[in-house]
Image (cartoon, rainbow, N blue to C red; front, side, top):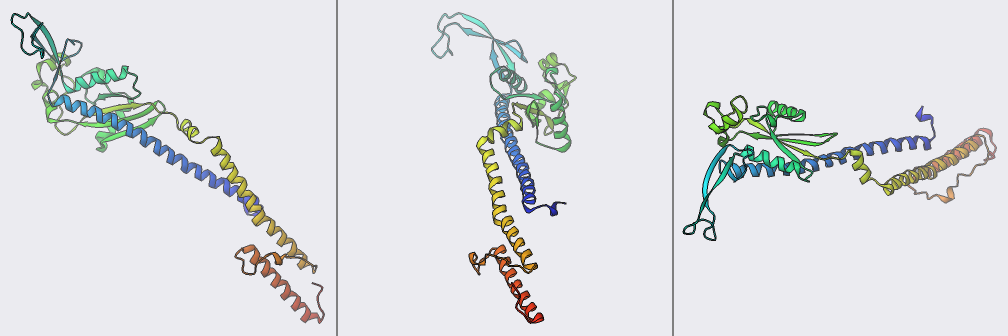
Length: 317
């Protein structure tokens, strides 16, 4: 049993258990700090996406020139080849040429923004998806399906996980009144929306309900990679040094004095001379072992006096 082991062994085991608990606490604290930092970065990305979507939605749609890859509306305008410096008033006799403009609603603009970011060197990626997508290309992946389910069922505003492939974050997007025109009743949706996406998906939403999520992906190192960056050789040396110092202290301050006191007590019990080295101790010492030594000396004196009374002769100790 542990209690039958020497104090040195018991202390070593207790120290190692305490060190393991401190290590576990360090792991939990560092892991929480790391996850919170990743979450903060993901929230910043989602904030920027929200801000961009709000900028587009305040105009209903934005129009871009000469981009017919994806659009919801088309308009052809006449523009002078030469005009005043600000280009607003054509010069007399200026030749007019047609210029094509294509409209993009907030969802389309945000999707194209996400595609640009996906191709960029930015480590942070994002996309918008929903449980009821209009564009099949926006279909949610496994994490996003789970995040949508948790957000809708548990009335959450956000959901995140630290996965082996990186940090995943999802923020709920709520249906706004300005979005109902395209995502409410399919029959009342703009014709260009119905022509481009059909009428089977992305409709039936009501103002205020969860329309989808902003899904953010961040690269994330494993916890052990982070821990090894935080805990280096010198930190390990200091931990080992703390263990050695503690072991030396417990031996010289507790174990060795107890051994000397035990040997002296055994000598006294056999009626032999024994030195308790009381001269090196202060009578007012607060050290428990010093006080035990003085108590042992008083016990030795009391035993000698008792023996003298019983035998009538002075004991040898």
